Length: 42
Image (cartoon, rainbow, N blue to C red; front, side, top):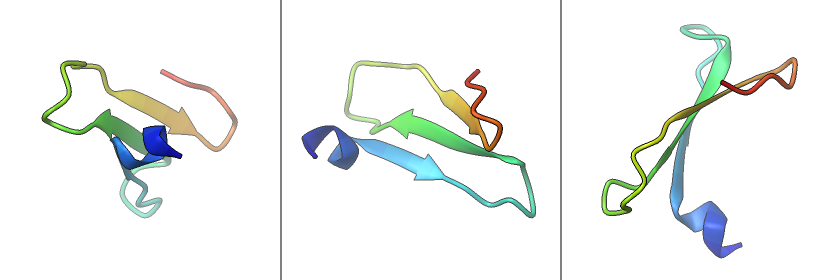
């Protein structure tokens, strides 16, 4: 559960068909993940 508290996810299907997942700004990781309903991850 702790990992879920450390990420920020945005999902607005009217604007973009995937979820945008980012770590919190205070984390050292600078990656962003796009997760689509088909299961594909970019």
